[in-house]
Length: 85
Length: 120
Picture (cartoon, rainbow over the protein chains, first blue to last red):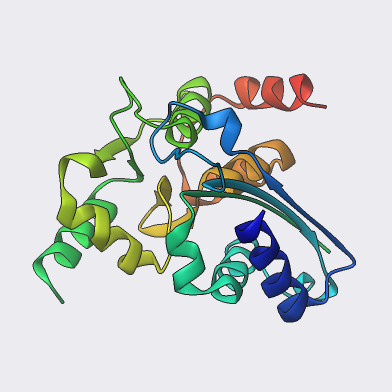
């Protein structure tokens, strides 16, 4: 749960979302590229924030990537992302 | 610009639709790449596939090119459109149809409607 909590903290600070779900889907990818024992490799994030209202889809994703930072992005294999206002 | 960036530019401007992916459209090596391949194939879109696993320079270079950290990446008429989540969302909302219409990319409109009906 360590990385999941880091993701949550970063996104809460950056966007003050009114809805945020961070789901570790690593188990679903067992045996696939990037899977590692102990999980925390594949995440699904659902986030709704007012900050996204003025952004296009690509911009929203880029903002989330930037909020997580290169280090954290580098430590996870996959990030499925759903952004809403 | 580096040689890799030049090669990427050349690929995305000389092909109307390009998918940078893991594996090939005949044999995707990743679930996310596979999802976009299935979608484009079902919509009968003519596109060029580039296997980033076959070329480490392209694999790193494409992330810098678009300032986007993940694969797959879809380009239409030289412009970066998005990754797997964005392409899926755009197909379901009809935005992908509009984009193809605007850019003069041919696709099967009926198939596209069927995708939306199946996911309504």
